Amino acid sequence: MTNIWNKGVFAPGSVESKIPNVLRGDVSLPAAIIQMSRLESNIRWMQEFADQAAVKLAPHGKTTMCPQIFKLQMQHGAWGMTLATAPQVAATVNHGVQRIILANQLIGRRNMEIVADTLHDTSVYCIVDSIENVESLGHFFAARDQELFVLIELGAAQGRTGCRNVEQVEAINEVIMRSEGVRLSGIEVYEGVLHGSNAEAAVHALLDRVLETTMKLAANDGMADQDFILTGAGSAWYDLVATRFLSDQLPSNVVPVIRPGSYVIHDTGMCDRFQNAILNRSDTANQLGGRLQSCLEIWAYIQSIPEDGLAIVTMGKRDVGFTDGLPLPSLHYRDTWVSPRPADSEWEVVDLMDQHTFMRIGPNADLAVGDMVSFSASHPCLTCDKWRHFCVVDDTYNAIDLWPTFF
Image (tube, one colour):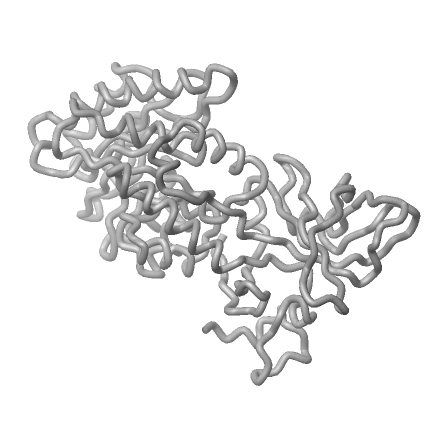
């Protein structure tokens, strides 16, 4: 266990002879609380999905940037980890991960230096979508007598990064082939930028292009004797991507890799909507039984009830994400109770300030200053990055450990 006694999170009254407990008031609130049993259930569920779908799993670590969570994911069978920035890569390598997809363009000398310094410990795959970037990477890594694995990215019109047509792919591939500092190692796509009523059809169309390009490049001279990575999938469409990546037409050296990240925390908003859609269309997901569960709770105190129907909570924009909907009250606890109770269905968060939450309550609400309330949130990435530590608890809210984050 991490030395949790001197982190400033637990109350001064906590001593080593007493296991700190959230409900007993041993933890400074607000706090980001992770339910260990649900976390492990989520990790098992997604790994079992990947295994049943016959694809590799490289979870996107940007959701939590928590090495202890990465370690659990790797122990359960993850092929590698996915990261978004060079410092994230360095932090992850420093904690023992040996295969990483940098799902982003590697731009700028200092960022290249950070990644270059990790290459003696790990294999890093980064994505490219321009001749200029390939040439810059080639010059930099050749000068250091190193070779960087690169994945050509395909993108959708009006989407984010990625080549829009086959001519761009062919031109970039030609430059890679004559560059000493980079090696073509596969194809990458991120279909999560596709939204709207026709999103599923658009995802299929994009994956058609990806498969066609993969078949051409993976069979090229010099590629047949090495693994050719084919990777995609965020949290919304990983079932479709996994199915399409197993096309019988692909060469045998293709290694399909999916990269969902938010599943490890899950939520009661955006990710839960994604999961419901996946369960409605994926036989593989349904056959696993169970489902992903929200395992992150933000616990805070009721600090004021200044007028009828309004409670002010010791939690704000610095503590919880709010771009995909305001947090939802989920549990209520008072120090005279044995265990938490479900929050009143009438309670509703209506506004957030930096350190305060405005919660509308009924005129006769059973709520008092000093009560604890837990909140769930949508889009876990934008809540996790607000915390330097997660307080990990068992099912009775005993603190198991304090896990640092590296955002």
